[in-house]
Image (cartoon, rainbow, N blue to C red; front, side, top):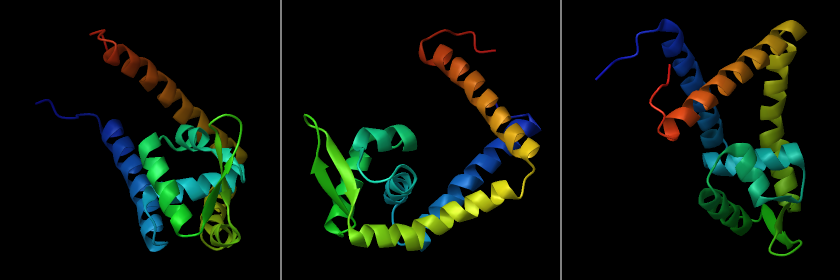
Length: 153
């Protein structure tokens, strides 16, 4: 088995995993699963009435996981579903859900905003630019790999 030899890749992977761990610790501290946190965070960001597919697209969590988390949040009295067009169901916050987001999720968003505020505009733009560039190039290589094209380099 070949090992990872490049410092940059090791460090990038370490940072990525540490970021995920921090969000996991935050979700645990708030007494919720990662997927429940992602759903409430998305509702905080997008507002009431978004669809399950919107949450899946934004969080990259499977439809099944999102659906079961929505049902659990519904049982806990934080969400309710409102029929839309066709089979669409809009995910809406109850009053308790709004309060929960205000007290628990919004402070996380404020922490994230304060991190960006601590960077110069050039630094935050560079961080985003480089992450986008990495993602675009990795998506291209992953597409080649996933479609059986052996040339990855």
